Amino acid sequence: MLTLSTQNRDKMRPIILYSSKSGNTKKIADSMASSLNCEAIKITADSIPSQAALEEYDLILVGTGLYAGTPNEDIMKYLGKLDLKNPKLFVLFITWGGAPRSDKMALSRLRTLLESKGQKVLQEHFASFGGWKGILMKRGHPKSEEIQAAGEWAKKLVEKLEKAI
Image 1 (tube, one colour):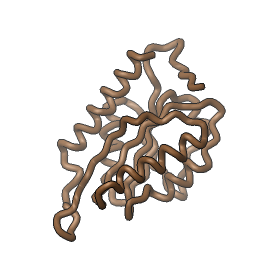
Image 2 (tube, one colour):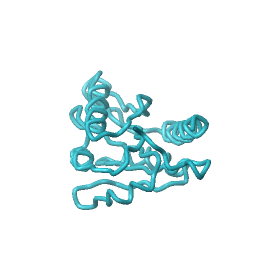
Image 3 (tube, helix red, strand yellow):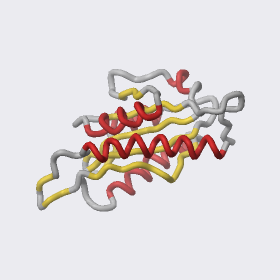
């Protein structure tokens, strides 16, 4: 059963966890963090936040770039070790420029991993697709409009969740 700790508050407490090799996912995470006035923490093999600290949050946004159609291995390892006392609400976001359907497979993999840990994952997600042009990946993504859209999406999502509580 999912319980949110917003009972004595009217605002959700979100946090963002992300992995980014090229910096594209970081741009999206930073925009969301700015819109939500929350922290965005980069997950790497060397810097892993305490899971105990996650207990304070109601909503955990998890983002990653996709590499050869798969989520970043640092975020997958971190989520694989996740052992929270109370189930949390998660929402996913990705950046990628790969093959069609690789996004759906990666989102499904992330969702399955989190749900196997007893967490609730919303179907709704944010995706920034750089795309391909011939055999060359499109450069310059995410564009400023996509970065801004990510922040607006996150803000609207939290507002919708707060109304539902």
